[in-house]
Length: 249
Image (cartoon, rainbow, N blue to C red; front, side, top):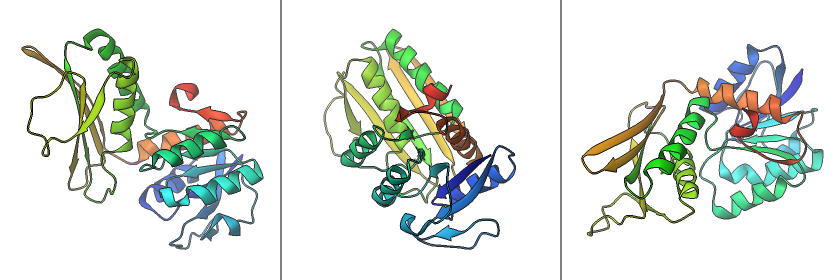
């Protein structure tokens, strides 16, 4: 049975992950790290990684970008694999994650849903067929408590599409500041925040007299929690390196 530490255990996603693990027999939550500590009956919660004093097999992180330094320092010191699902990282922090993967196993994905990762593959395939002929726009919708915009998943989709087009496109975030016609090498990314939307993503291919839309809707945070737990169990047996959903699948 794998011993799991949840980083961000007192947040909404952290609590869902703890609930998912509680109903599994192949892993157990043995500790949590959260600045805003709240009591759990079945595992201790620490404010920082420096305070963790229990053996851990793998870390699942759904916290805040500010936690990254301490978490990676702990993970590298203890040779502990880490699943990183936090969004809102700066470019330098993403480079830091890639550097850590040289010494420990790191699973890094902006979205842990199987369906979203299928959407990425479908978008790449559609881009190969339609790219250069159709304008590509991405629309993401989330609840009114989400802080970062655009979502990490929207960026993941845009990056996958742009890579398929050999990096020939640039991203345009909304259009209120521009008064000009759309350029052919743009990928538009648009954010909507409202209510309790868990996560909706659309990739729109707009051509002459026809539009193709690929979409995914998440109705519960549990889809992300299940994906992160599966990733943690997969990662616990891997060598140092950077892993993503396609590797697990």
